[in-house]
Length: 182
Image (cartoon, rainbow, N blue to C red):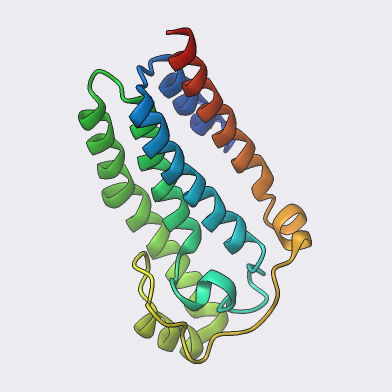
């Protein structure tokens, strides 16, 4: 019997539902984690409105400061939601999540993404990657960065970021509800 792979968003929804279900938030964890989650959502929203996959090298908006703003946003959301939930084993869950992020997710995505970007954009991407870090933003924008405006069409239609945002907001709402209901 061959097992079928789950649709792409299902594992994310299941993990976030479990996080909300088992949450034991406190006032300060909701505030601090909520702030980090919001910053992560804003970074992802800003980035998704500048990303034209396989058409041009994204260097405008947040890409002028950090090479992987979508991953940075995901990292901030991960830390924020874990902090909001403050499970009985909050530090353990957060350490596990960070371990998966840095030792599985990022290396796998980074390897695949770098190969794809080098294939499409060659020397321009190699120069950009050498001068703009993956997750730690530059203080000043990259001098050769583009100046394209943020696009709602890219955000909604091409990158479909609204679905990820809705899943995160539902998880955050579930965590807040657990805090209110107890």
